[in-house]
Image 1: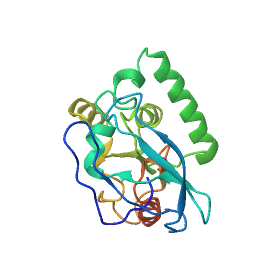
Image 2 (image 1 turned 45 degrees about the vertical axis):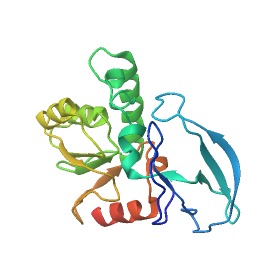
Image 3 (image 1 turned 180 degrees about the vertical axis):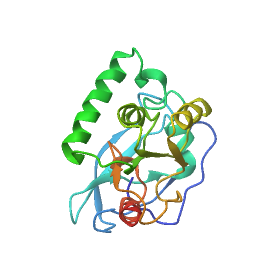
Image 4 (image 1 turned 180 degrees about the horizontal axis):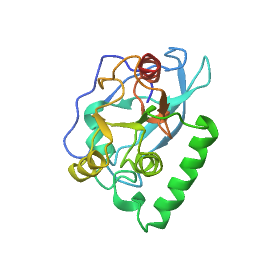
Length: 205
């Protein structure tokens, strides 16, 4: 999500999401041109149409206006892909393929992990990648952050020794100078304040 101004529009009754005007999160410019419109045709959290604009200064494309954080439960319902059982492990073929791909990507970047490393997965969803890491390396100190953890997911992850931080990245309490590695798989487009979020993660490393 792009950075935002303080003004918000009231949420009408029904399935309309609360939105607010915003500016380009890359350069801060308010000048933009509409390039596309669309709606949530997968989860149908709202039937309203949203506008994608291109920044006239740097060409970054973003939603304007953007949903506010109050709209999170509608945008990410309980059947949202990474929250549902669709990508859970065990004999689930989709989950096994997804975990294998993510572990391969992770190893190609991180290489050999030292004993006891502290690893934070931001936007960890149902925590499948963390579970896979825990199964391979019980010595790792694994943390997961997401805006919400269903009770069953929280119970299972904590039982596997994974520490959880609930909240948006921008607002979540993270210890500084703590983590050895931070993972962000398909995350950046879900942030309201990308710059603020990245600065917080840099401070937590």
